[in-house]
Image 1: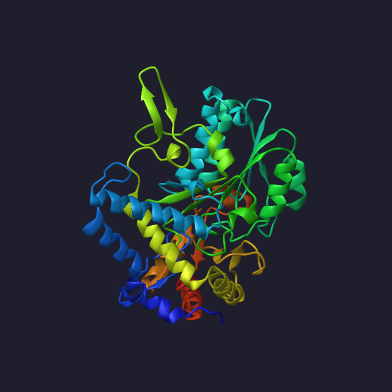
Image 2: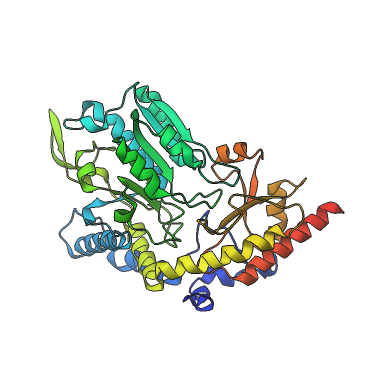
Length: 419
């Protein structure tokens, strides 16, 4: 196995000691939200108990301590994604807010001085992929509606991968924005980022990556990815809810109009006009998610200590183990790539004649937590002709024994319905 001591890791997560319906919890829903190690819980408690104050506003001791903790978290996140400049890290509420921030800021370019590069009109096109989470579809549809731009998408094939030939066909000289997922939450597919970014750059388009599912599972190097923006969220990477991150190239952020107006995002305010702070504060209006950001910093420390290469290797082994085990269940259909190549630790499946919600509910009676539905990626379900899927997703604390429990549970569900 890999360099991770999974049994030791599991002891760091107090919730994994729970029982559900009288049996040990098997948590296979990390793509939905991950569990939190004790160090993250302790960090948040410590902040509120001893250092709680608003940031960037007070000169007293607590204010200075809170500001230092908040900005230290920014430094940790910048190092985690290999950002060349800490001021490229913008704290948001989650990935959805980060993606909306970009879309609505681009909308504001029509009246913002020096933002000509972001202006979009009826002759322009916005491109996403067919496998996107709704959070990386709806903001761009809304932008297209506001500007008159054409909304287009890259299709996916029967194995859940992008149709390679479509990249050069769909992304063309009219394309202004290409927004796509790094790792699909519905299929597990890891997309060819450099290939897409290179094509987008060749036609002068901005690139936006949704890294919500890759940040907890793969080494994330924004310089190597080459995109203009990368969004991810804290609660899927063993941090708290309520905090996300938008990374953007500084030269792009510096020209981008603000999204929200309020305290701390300004330089000067006059009744006749306002000038705005440089990034990242231009995009962090009002009191931010201070304790949550500090907690995210602790989660980043935890993952960094484990080593993201080790995390990726562990989860790759889990996928290699789980795919044939689940495929051996008669009638089970895996929705997504059939092999572990360029595939993350998320496996969606269907059982003939059994609704995914029934599968999930019956698995829960055996203590197994999975998700059922369209996973905020309904176009994927439409593409494969299913109303919904059952999805098992793994994390650093997942074991092969838990995968065995899942397979047994699925067999038991089948037997129950056959009776």
